[in-house]
Image (cartoon, rainbow over all chains, first blue to last red):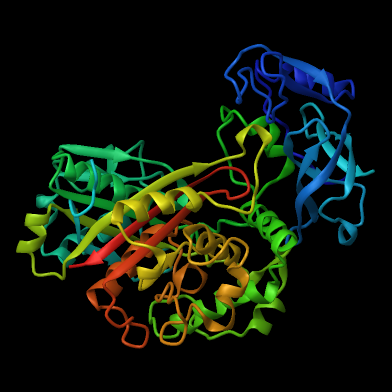
Length: 127
Length: 389
C-alpha cells in the first residue's frame, strides 16, 4: 500500500490488541460474563458493564455491511463497516480489490496494513 | 417538567456574510448576537443566559461572555456538532422554564471557507483520548465517506436511487434562487446532480452542502417578555434529543437519532407529522434529509426516496416544503454546523417573514431537525417543534 495510514492511538486498554497485531494476530474483546464480543475494544463490556473482558483470536472472516469509495482525494480508498463472523461490525478499509467490484454482503478476510509509525491495523480484502 | 409553552423565540438573526476573511470568529459571534437582540427589540444588557457550542472561541462559554461583556446567571456549552443549536434552543427553553434565566442568547459562528478547510474530504483532527480513536483514525473516515456509507446501505436495503437523492438538492435550489444571500442560487436539475463528480460513492458533489463562513443567533425569552415585545409570537411546544452510536458493534446505519428525538418532541407538542406545515431538516448531504424525514415519521421507513422525488419538498408545489432559505445545500452552512440556520428559517416561516416566493401559507406549526457529528459512527440528533401563537 502506498497510501500513508495515520498511526492508531495505543493506550492501556488497547495495548494487548496492537501487540498481537504486530504478530499478525487479530484479537477481539469478548466478555466472559455475558459471552458477547464487542467493538471497538474497551475494558468494560458495553452490553453488561462487566470488567471481565478477555482477548480472543478472531477468525478474521466477515462480510461488508456497507462501504464508500473516497474518490476526490489523491489516493482513492474504500472505507467500510465489516460485520465479523463473531458478531460485531467494525469500521475498516477494504484493500487489494478493484474498487468497482466491491459489494455489500461480499465476504472478506482480515489483512493487517502498516501505519506511518505505529502498529499495523486490521483491514479486509475480498475472501 | 415540560418546555411546552414555557419559552418563545423572540429574536433570530442570520449573518449575511458567506465569506469573512477579515473578521475573527469572536467578532462574528458578537455580530450575530447583536443582530438577534436587535431583532427581538432588546439589547445585550437584557441577556442573562448564554448558550454556545464548540465553535465559540475559548474554552466553553466564558471567553465570549467576556468579549460581549455579558452579565449572565446561566451559561452552557454543549458540543453535539452541527445539531448543537437545535439542542441548545431546547436547553435554553428548559433553563427559562426552570427560572434560571429570562433572556437566553445562543450564538454560532465560524470561518471554514476563509480557512480553506477540506470539510468533507479530509479526516478531522481529533483528541487522542477519544476512546474509539485507535480504531478509527487509520481508516480515514471523513464527513463525506461516512455519509456515503449510510447512503450506500440505504440504497441496498430500500432501493433508494441517486436520482431520488438528487431531488433534495433540486428542491433546495428552487428555494435558494430567491435568497440574495445564498451561496448557490442557480436552479439545478436531477441530471446535473447525478452527473456532478462523485465525491464518496454514492454521493456526488451536488449531494454535499456548501462550505461557508458566517453564523447565526437566537434569543429565547419568558412568555410574558415575549408578549411585551413587538415581534410575532413563536412558541416552543416540543423538543427531543438523542445520541445514536455504534452500540458496541451492534448497529444499523439506515436510521438516524431522529427516530428517537422526533417521537419525544411530537409527544411533548401533542401534534403529529401530518400537522406540520413547514420543516427545516439538516441537509449536510441529500441522504441526511431522506433518513431524517423517514425517522421523524413524515413517510414510512425506506420510503424517503420516493417521498422527496418529483418536487415534493418544493414550497408551493410539494406537500412538505423544506429549507426554504436554500438550506445547507445551497444557502449557508456556517462553521460546518447547519442547525442554527434551520431554526432561523423556521422562525421566518412562522412569522410570515420568509421570501414571498417560498412563504408557506398559514404557517402556524413548524419543525426544525438537526443532526451533528458523523451519521456513520456517532451523532447527536435534536428535534424542535414551534408554533405561531
